[in-house]
Image (cartoon, rainbow, N blue to C red):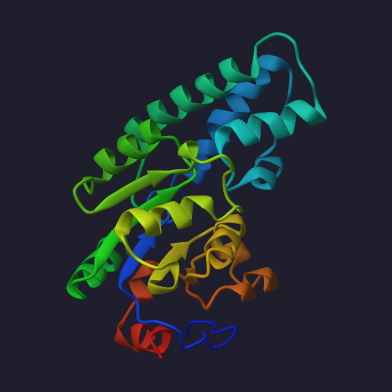
Length: 231
């Protein structure tokens, strides 16, 4: 059964669903970690997989700045490190990228509601396009918006507020679906309803109680959950 932290406020009906991408649609978190570990090694920073989780959900420029502040380097510029990580990630997406469980079900379920569908990601546009092409779902979304266009990335709500604006909707009429805590914080700060689908090790993390509902995968999305979120 899904974990329901609290009932959402009955403010507005859902008129759009906004999907996150990394860790929700495509199993890219291990690829992000692989790319970061590989490239940061070039500036003598030895990251572990657990260290990489500290920056999960942030934009790549914020990730690089985070580690630069902790372990400054002078071999490459921060921009060069960013570009190298992005290029490595895209290479890994093409060779190893896979959809996460329930993606087709989740997308088809939302389509059946005849509402708007959008994507709001912390990833750069070229990463988004590589991932959506790999999963063959590029034509699914009416709006695709990257936080690289925003002054600040998640957990700042800007990426979600702009996406709602592009959809022509109030944020309160939108449901965001997220996997990271930073993403959930961003969605709730934008006053959206939010489903959290964390990785299994984070499923019972009490910090996700800010979400309106916590699920194990998109496969669980059904009429009971939809009605609950619209109540």
